[in-house]
Image 1 (cartoon, rainbow, N blue to C red):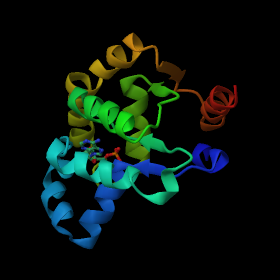
Image 2: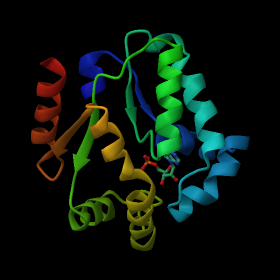
Image 3: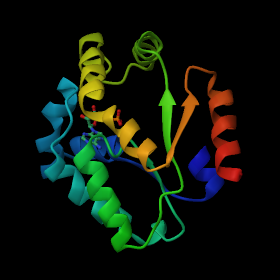
Image 4: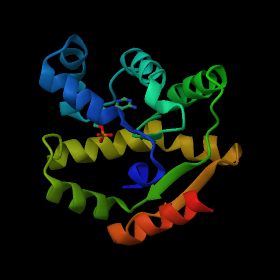
Length: 165
Ligand code: AMP
């Protein structure tokens, strides 16, 4: 909804990977098991994918990255890439939600990798690899936290207020 309002592409690495798995491409075949286990797909598969995607024509006026970066090396790569293509980051949004709310929501969503044991592993991987990005972006004064346990409408309205400011 936000990407549509801002007229920028919504770039979800998870969605790109799920399409690759569905298409049975080489990327999909390599990524499949990591995704089923709730592990991060290795950076050497993700970084080229992001570089290629941000090089496409529809990104000239901006983009909304969803699910990327997921660890510090990815964030460092992104920073370098954005310098190269001369595109700044306006905000890095942390949608802050307690674990029990996340588990309940994902069990309702019922994606293929939303089995409880896999969700719990994703949370563990998040703590170890993704949560350090909060300090990474806070120290660069780019971090905005939004209370993600609110209703979808309230989260959307907070996000809109942020980008329209
Ligand atoms: P998501 O749709 O963002 O929940 O991602 C689904 C799955 O795709 C994750 O559990 C990872 O296995 C993989 N994935 C998505 N984005 C990334 C990323 N930036 N780095 C590594 N793996 C990713």
